[in-house]
Image 1 (cartoon, one colour):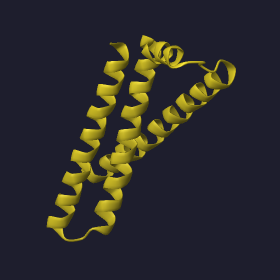
Image 2 (cartoon, rainbow, N blue to C red; image 1 turned 60 degrees about the horizontal axis):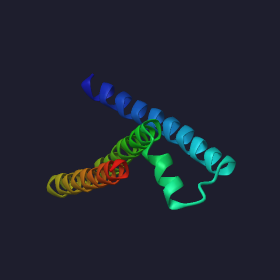
Image 3 (tube, one colour; image 1 turned 90 degrees about the horizontal axis):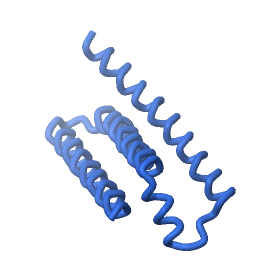
Image 4 (cartoon, rainbow, N blue to C red; image 1 turned 180 degrees about the vertical axis):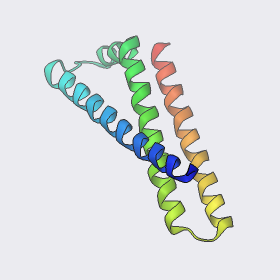
Length: 112
């Protein structure tokens, strides 16, 4: 029974993250179509706004969660030797943690 709940949770993470990413991308594209920043300073001011930077942070968190679930499922389905599977999952986790830290650093510096 625990495995079925895990599958449902992964399915829900995929769907919710995909919907949020789609809505965020529509928002960003609409903003740029309606009011294109004319300079780096204008873009920086826009991304430094707390609402926009928070929405961007949630976007990247959703992207990383989406990537984790999708790539984890591929590894679990197609990598059969246990040692290789554990190594691949560890590398994936480290890579995604590194990407997440990089995003946090970029968004943090946008405020400074």
